[in-house]
Length: 605
Image (cartoon, rainbow, N blue to C red):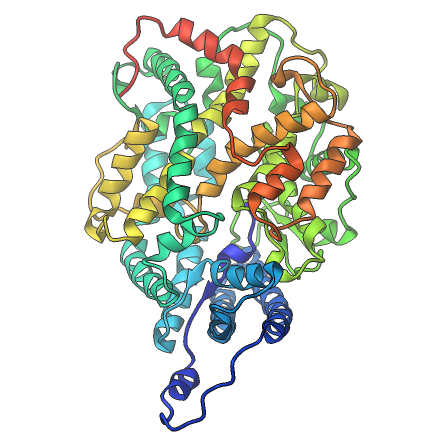
């Protein structure tokens, strides 16, 4: 996850601006704006935004790595400060509406209106209320824990149970315990939606969700249709995986898992059933093959948190990309401190918007966090290569690009690569070993797709009023059943607020980016493999050490958001349309095998 412009709330009208707008009708009309004035305004806006963002993010860093009432209050003040600035700048920018401008100036003015994550209402009191709610929601999540008989478990401890236990009652208790932390959020979140919608409407959008969907160089309706098109491309593969996994879980847990129907969410190895890699031992196609236990290898080889991050950096530098700055190693948080509360959710930062790169993680020495490290470093390298651009361009071509860069490199973490760096002693080369490996990858990559899509589908319906507060939880589980084919392990009430148990909802982080990233990473990978001269099946390719692939990646990263995303996509892949067929190509062996295994079964839910 990245933490940049998406956390930026905006548009409020300062009282002075309201007063000025009500001056006597006899006052002289303002002089007509000129293109030169628009260019000068954009330059000044970038300077002011750079200073404000850097100050705000430095406060947020302290708040997320040292949660107290004081740091939470400071973070709220920082958000309000940015709101005030963006409000003023957007108000000023309206004098250039309709003016014929050069492409660069016009794009930056558009991004000024679209880059913020939380559009504040024009009323100053409501603006302050929204900033306080936004900070409170994140802090409640960060401090969340489940307590029983005087013993409390945080998300890390509860997630460990979900990942490792095979005791159904224990899994159910851990799942239910964590989902209790979000119950107090519901009423605050409903108010938050009202206030954010006011801000979005003040900008000219129908609602907050329409504003989110307007960020993709296409209309909101076109973007929603695009996500459905991509989902349609990959759904048949997900359906086959779901059918196979459900059968294996039923064999282990018995009637807790229906023969035909949604899978109970607590049995899939992850608190949100978003990725299923932790249940690989229960669904392994062929036992007795060469070990693919990277977690065990990391631990046996003496890896710690620092060494894991160094390994991630070495992949990027093997492509000819720059080493991370010394300050990264001095200022990042790799381990959970023992003396204070922190937000452990992994995130990447450029705190100063000037190459002050950091990651914030409570790293576990396991395969999952090794992949997460690659993902977060992908954000850092994006920051590094575009930080000299105007701050309005310091972003991904679209948010799926930003999320997909590190994951693209993770696709090159093949058995051959793991052997090269000493984490595997031998490389599996037979058909059974290949199916095992692809199953392991699919439990992460394919299993995630519907979850990646449905979170924002839920929020879009909340923002546009289709889902009322009393139906928040009902709608959440309807979408999870529709797209994922999963169900709640225990009955849920209207008073529950299960969406809030997922970080990105209380933290106001749009989620479709992760769905797009899952698609784009395979499209990026296929293009870079072709560029590197790879011959053979896509799943066997690793671009590790290929400088030509690194040059192509660097060229795209350096563009930031200065051009529409199809141009950035073309710079890397030679294509201008997002395409999920690369993912289908990558998993071709597994898809054929799954179809054989599922013959005669009652698939679907």
